[in-house]
Image (tube, rainbow, N blue to C red; front, side, top):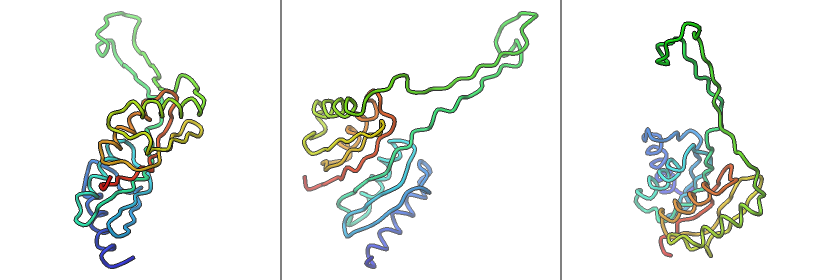
Length: 181
């Protein structure tokens, strides 16, 4: 790694860690000239976008290859417990305790081939994305998007399309922002 690449990498890492909107501990940064490559995990699409935006603010950076996985919070049942009638606003002499377990899991299984086709069709309908420039692969409900897009808005649109497609459990983007496009 060249001296300038090391300085840019340090500057990016410092900015990632300084931003309290994201957890940078699972983000790996590589710099190759005017290109930054991110690998690792973040918890939200917003955090993933923020990482790219931070990099693009750095002088000499012209493209970002954001390969960060979005690890959606796994559905953990949460216990909700009311300990008194007052908590519930109910006045009944025999009611003294209520517990409920709440959780969320995908309700249906969708075949990978159907997910891939649904994502492709939705990308094709989007005015923000050139669908011909994006390759869609799906394995066990995980969508992988690969290709080049013109800007961060196109990345966001492609990710949201994939995330909100029925049957998708996770999304990984290998989309590269090419500002020359």
